Image (cartoon, rainbow over all chains, first blue to last red; front, side, top):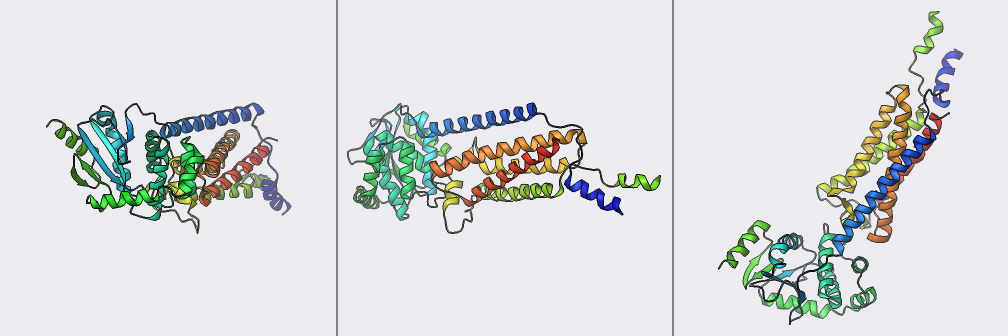
Length: 237
Length: 157
């Protein structure tokens, strides 16, 4: 009887002597390896993110006469005017497509992309559009960096563009946050975003993305392959 | 003779302290649940249930939610699955291997804790949003880590 009750209790509460323990050296080795691994992960991860945020533009960026940001040479044979909403998923897809073809068309001076805000989805769309113009105030390159970061952070579009976050993006890109925050808080760009929306409607835009390639209207995103084909066919004309 | 040898045929005297082992297994299971849910919502692009706050989606859909093209939640899920597998193995491997398995549990949970700390830093200072699921995972991982230290102490007399 005493044997029976003594057995399990010993098993539960008092560790039986170990044949093989863990040496301090082994523990130190594991800790060292883990710390190095995590440090490496963090460094790799943050350098990747910095790369995403700090794109250097080797090709022309600027502002059109009517105040819209562009990238690609103004004298390019092809001109793509894009009406976009930062909250719209297909716009994000199309932004990725434009990024993918950038090397072959925009950076080589064949295509100029002009961005026009068409913020019609929600109040957050409007705030994001205003923020993008606040970034444009600092430089056209800042606008495009901010544009890329907005779409990259859009996710499912839920609360992606709260004021706090819009300001954080500017900080992440190393913009002048004082000027940016003042611009955003004072809603300095509200009138222009409304004017852009009205101008878009007048041009026949009623959804996003809508784009005019050499004045020919296209509605919706296009796959990279199709867009390349279209651009090539126009270039060969 | 027969009677005196009988107690030794009772299950092998394992140094695994039962309640602690069960607690660690439960924590690893809870971790699989949390990380699994986040992985599931991420991979199928579903909104994350988050009470009244919108922090979960902000975090889960930020550019920080992926590493090298893989959702961070999936890394977490794999870590918890590996921890659970090690914990179960701990009960079945030979006595000589037990120490190494215990060490592996310690190392893996340390990895999890350090990485959770980094992610929590990102939430608090970079993304500016906190996701309760991520906090839950960080707490679970911290629990596993503390218990694994304790476990190692018991393995080392």
